[in-house]
Amino acid sequence: MTQLLHWCGPDFDGAIVFDECHRAKNLWTGSSSGQGKATKTGTTVMELQKRLPKARIIYASATGASEPRHMAYMTRLGIWGPGSPFKDFSEFLQAVEKRGVGAMEIVAMDMKLRGMYIARQLSFSGVQFRIEEVELSERMEKVYDDSVKLWVELLHKFEEAAELISAEKKMRKTMWGQFWSSHQRFFKYLCIASKVHFVCRVAQDVIKMGKCVVIGLQSTGEARTMEAIGNFYTRYTLFENHRKSLIQHCERSELCLHFEWTKVN
Image 1 (spheres, rainbow, N blue to C red):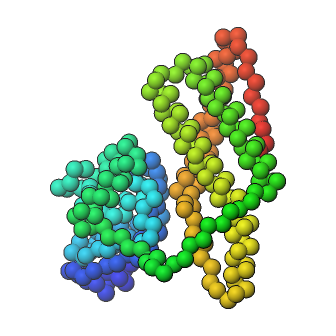
Image 2 (cartoon, rainbow, N blue to C red):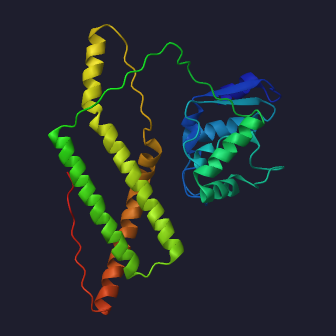
Image 3 (cartoon, one colour):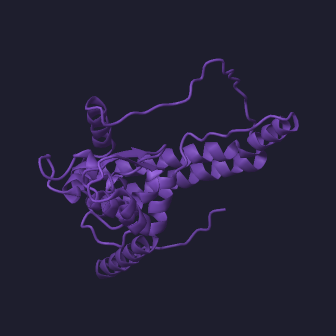
């Protein structure tokens, strides 16, 4: 970065293009409180913008921000800071996370109206489409049936848990919202998994014909996967604490619960 600053000079007012800028997304690694250690890439991008205040900044990426916290390095957007509705990024993050995906869509629409956000995609002119029916193997049918049984059991367990703790209406609404969204994601990825072998066979046949294969996924699940990995130990600790507290409560209330670990293949 020292070399870049030397080349540009303190009064540089040209354009700086951060290509593949999503690599700086982990600038904000902690919770909404801002705790955590930022990556070197995120820190460098942030410092470069700070040291060259007159430079024009362009953020270029196919996956700019899959979560609100990934926007921390985009300080030149003017969404937060002096003269904006939000004092700092932390305040912006709290407001967006509180309102979910709808808030992110509104932010994107506002940026597009102000000319700050431009999105382009390849033309599908002349492209031919063909719908293939993928037959399920016996193994995949068993996996699907077992998954249905698992989610039905989970549904009953959640209902019992809500009654056990006398959950209020607001709490039930939040709980069921998370439950059914997880249910939908689970079966969506299960459907994608069922097509893998078929896609591989088609790809091998096309390669033998001397053609190039491009496989596109509707959703890679990267954001949820990284979030799950990052918070695994925290969630496991919370689960253990809640489990122990529940057992103690039941023992005092002369109730008996049976906890069983089930291995899902």
